[in-house]
Image (tube, rainbow, N blue to C red; front, side):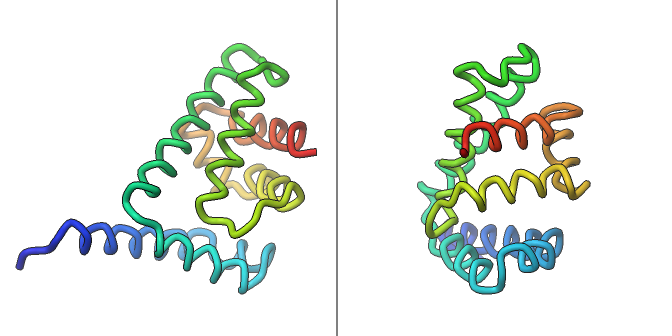
Length: 141
């Protein structure tokens, strides 16, 4: 059976949603509600390959800048602000509208929930989730 690139991409997005639902579905629904989750899922599934790649690139920027902030302890540096701006930009790929309060709420989940903490701490280094939370709280106000 031959599968087109478009079909592969659609399958990839479905896998990502299933994984996200399995890992975080109940917490996200509890915090943001069913309508927000449905809206996120719809935007994600309607995303084209170009935007998906841009979203991945943006996440990689967040991780890169976050590594630099941790290395230099430069929370209040230009790089610290770049972490915030990149993370905010990353959210806008799937959020219908941006809210500083929702962004801060998500950042707090990164520290309160060990699965989120593990994600950032594994990708960047121990303490990364806490530093990311601190940056978002500082710049989202």
